Length: 238
Ligand SMILES: *[C@@H]1O[C@H](CO)[C@@H](O)[C@H](O)[C@H]1NC(C)=O
Ligand SMILES: *[C@@H]1O[C@H](CO)[C@@H](O)[C@H](O)[C@H]1NC(C)=O
Ligand SMILES: *[C@@H]1O[C@H](CO)[C@@H](O)[C@H](O)[C@H]1NC(C)=O
Ligand SMILES: *[C@@H]1O[C@H](CO)[C@@H](O)[C@H](O)[C@H]1NC(C)=O
Ligand SMILES: *[C@@H]1O[C@H](CO)[C@@H](O)[C@H](O)[C@H]1NC(C)=O
Image (tube, rainbow, N blue to C red; front, side, top):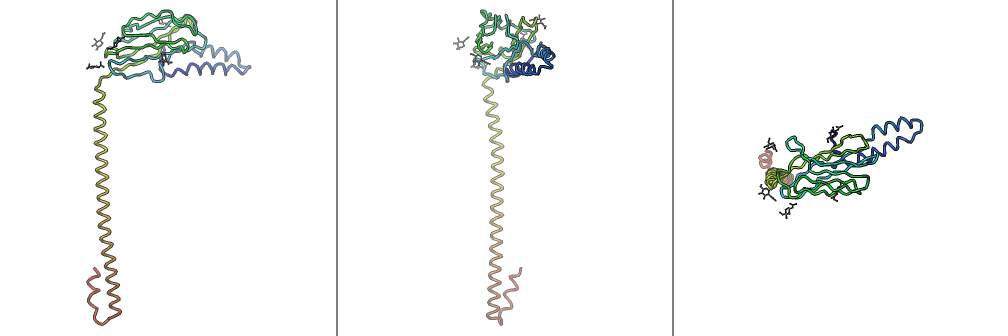
């Protein structure tokens, strides 16, 4: 069983690739053979993010699309739910040809609606009022008779959560605010420290200036009246 979770664009690009490589005439036959061999007839996709976390009681869409380079005829598809390893069929139907809606879709599970649309190869289903029992893996399966019973599938995982998630959020908020608070505290501390250092520096500077001013004035006084000032300059040269 081929399991695939990548985007729905992949099949299309592969189709493009095979038509491009068919251009050079010299290796036409080889390329044709290769492209027929490699371009898979059918591919199922449950989207780029085949995973959903939803609240119990909510209604969710399980997405699935199919793509085929060689076209489809009586494409059989179903959705299966993996219940502890046993696959339970959720719904199934047959699409007669490209662009046609499936024959009446049989639904085997309660609260399930088929909401696929033929114009976008869309075979998504809707799950109403989900409960915790709905959690698990859902497989979107397809088989195109044009490919002699080759099976293709993609898995979508549904996780059902409670309001408990909100508690998780508050916890992260608490942690975030605690970390933020710690950082703020640290910054305040640094600011205060720097401010104190700055003030101390200024005081020191002021002292120096005062010292200079005083010593220069002392010099002046020395110059003006050199006779009586031999004492004052000495104590200020600390
Ligand atoms: C989800 O489950 C919890 C506990 O099982 C319940 O209390 C709550 O009402 C449920 N929520 C909804 C929307 O059903
Ligand atoms: C699935 O497994 C769980 C735990 O192993 C068990 O409690 C539950 O009853 C099982 N469900 C079914 C349908 O077997
Ligand atoms: C989903 O729940 C709502 C309200 O509880 C109810 O009216 C509705 O019929 C339910 N839908 C299904 C498909 O069970
Ligand atoms: C499939 O169809 C449903 C309903 O029309 C839509 O909500 C959803 O987006 C479609 N999904 C894709 C992959 O086109
Ligand atoms: C495809 O799946 C069916 C069951 O749906 C199984 O019987 C068959 O053997 C599978 N074919 C291949 C080629 O795996």
